[in-house]
Image 1 (cartoon, one colour):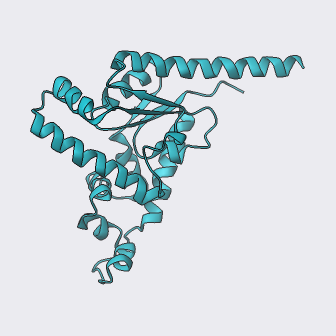
Image 2 (cartoon, helix red, strand yellow):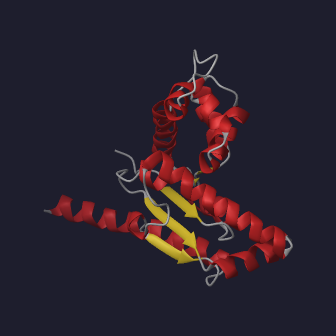
Length: 223
């Protein structure tokens, strides 16, 4: 049986550099990086438009009306208001099922997956490395201003809105805390550790785990 392709999930607080670290880890490991491409795959599974799935994911964190209209049966149950044109819509369980289907399928091919609650969905995936990039709020804001060229007011607003949205997304779908350290093998302060070093650490951890498994397999073969 061939060696399993590397699988890394990365959960990143706003300003912790997930969008920079993830693609570089994927490149170093020779696997696909998945972030905004995931909704396209989910949309294909659900026969919906990708932009509609993206809007739903965004609304998951904010509780706005698009979520309710997309998942009409569940929305009617929550609000008590019958929604028109509900035929053919998908409920929350269907969305979770299809997200899980896409994540698990891509994990079998080898992937670095940013966000989407992947550490929860793939918690039992053998060999997957789950990483959290975080750091103090003030340092994350400073890092966004430095790397992204945002002014302080814009950076603070984006940090507040994005962190809340990501927490609500995971809590709403999985009833979990995205920042629960028990879900991750590595927790890196990406405001204290240079982002290039974060990449090195993650790649080294993946390679080290592979070497450990190989040693275990060799010992088993000699037993």
